[in-house]
Structure formats: C-alpha cells, structure tokens
Image (cartoon, rainbow over all chains, first blue to last red; front, side):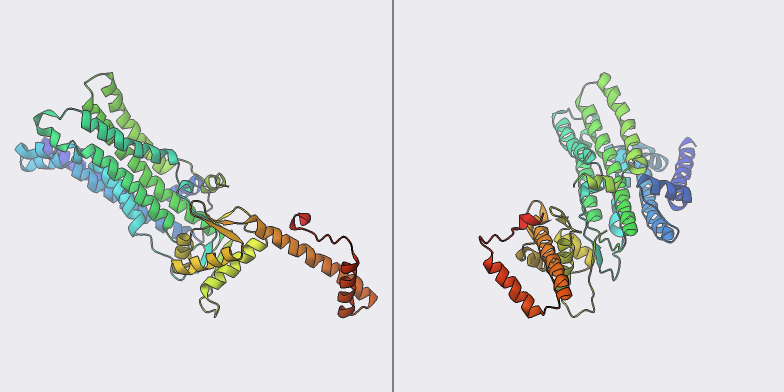
Length: 273
Length: 135
C-alpha cells in the first residue's frame, strides 16, 4: 500500500512538473527574463519571444520529468518485483533527473530552433561563447572530470557488487562537459537573422538563456558526480558530511545559473574591446 | 548595429556585394581599426551563403589592404585603411576649397590644373604630405 501511495505522489509530482513546463511561462516570467538579460521585449515581438521561450522551457521540464521517473525506477520495481528493486537503485538512476534535464536543455537548443528563412541580412558583431556565459563555470565543469576520474581510480570498489557502477561518476562528468561544449557550439553558431539592433539584442538574450540552462544543469551534473566519486574514495569523516551538503549547493547553483543569474551580453562583449 | 545585406536579385555576385559593403564600413570608420570581423562561418550562416563566398569577400578585402587575416584572432580591420581614407578625405576637401575659389575667379578647369602643376613644380624643396600629417 505504501509503495502505491508513493507512486501516486510521484505521478502527481511528475504531472505538476509537466504542467509547469507547459503553462508556467507567464507574462511576469517573460518580464523577469527581459530584465535579467537587459532587453526590451515590445508588444510587437512579444509573441515571437514568448513562443521561443515556451518551447525550450516545455522540452526542459518534460525531460526533467522523464529523468525523475527513471530515477524512481527502484520504486516502480518495488511494486512489480520487490526482490529485484535493488538492481535499479544505482548511481545511474540516482543521477538520471539531472542528466535528463541537461540533455533536455541541449535538445531544446538543437532541435527546436529553426533557421530564419530568407534572411540575407547579418550584423558584423562577432559572437563569442564568453559573451553568453561566465567562463568560470566551464572551468569548473572541466575540472570535475579529472577529480571524478582520480577519485574513482584511487577509491575502493563498493562492497556488495556496487563497484560495477563506479564508472558512472566520471562518465557523467564527461557527459556534462560534452553537453556544454556541443550546446555552446550550437547556440553560438546558430544563424542570427536579426535585422535591427533590438532584434539582435533579443537574439543574443535567447542564446544566453539557452546556454545558461545547459551550463546550470551541467554544473549540477558534474558537481554531484564528482562529489559522489570523492565521497566513495575517502573514509567516513567530517568531509563526507561536507560533500553531502555540497550536493545541495550544486542544486542551488543549477537553479541560480539557469534562472536568475543576471547576465548582460552587451556588458560581456564590451570586455572584449 | 552595423549590418551587411545581400540582394539575391542583384547581378553583382554576393561576395562582391559583401566586399563593397564591408569596405564602405571600414573606409567611413563605422568598422574601427582593430575591430574583429565575424568569422567566415558565422557570417556565412547568418547570410545563408556558402563559406567559400564569404571567404572570397574577405580575401578581396585582405588584398586591398583593408583587413588582415589572423589564424588566432580572426579577421581584423587594419588601421592603415582608415588613415588612407582620412587622407583621401583631406585631399578632396582641399580640392573643393580650391574649386570654390576658382569659381569666384571664373577660371576654367584646365587653367586651374595647369596653375596647380606650375605651383607644385616651382615649390622647392618638394615636401609631399604623408598620411600621418592628416591625423
């Protein structure tokens, strides 16, 4: 009975996540977005901007909902075959919600952004990846890869057969780095098709928004994975408590980077001059 | 925002349209010396052109001494290009002033040119202005 109740709660939560993705983009959020990136979204282009933001948001949230359910596979299996439920409680399923959110953010930028047709006007502004995101976070993600790899290499294998999932932490760090690299490449290379200063700013803000979501998720994915690997490698101590708290910090950083960090593309671009 | 636009219906090839517009932006100073032009890849994608077409336009600008291609820094606008432009502007301005003065005197263009030649050859030592003098 308890397992079924848990599943009902999970499904309700999943439905809530999907509904937030589909209907959560209110006018207030669009206004907050415009303030965050320092762009003016006038009424004439508001539907266009809103549509673009909605599509990306819907994909991200649905991907997160899928990941959430993958992460809860042990609970599902508990209802079907309780003896085998433990097989699904591994490092891969535990990181699945964050991993799915990162891949969803990447997919949103790759799949749903169409090339403006018939656009034969281009700005002479050079687009650099560092116009759209703080390079510190890329260094952080890249740094997590060797940390997770070394911790996995030197750490003892988990007792009870858990050792066969040890590869997950370093691989997830590599997945985070790859997602960010591909995402940045896709977003920066995307054709602009902006024929006015106003549209160019909005186009830049949309790029920055996409990259912030990918990088935010990737920071959480790499950080959680590296912390998990280090946690395994060291004997239980105060540091393991710190690492456990760090997990919460990584989740908070994800939300901050993705939704509320104030990033002005113009200001970032000025530093290159 | 500085833009370049390609007219698909124009008989002028796209690379030449691109070259002409970038040259104009460089000569009149809207694209400043040291400024980096977009990468060939970026401009080709934004304009929907082949990369070779954009690269050809950039190569033409490089041959004209307006930009320099750097593997690390990309394509950079040269300072010299704008100095030459300012120098040309100064000469044109002086010529206009001279023509205005001649109009008041009612002198023909041939007589005016002869007068300039005579004055120029009689001037010793010959000290032609350099580009730097116009700064």
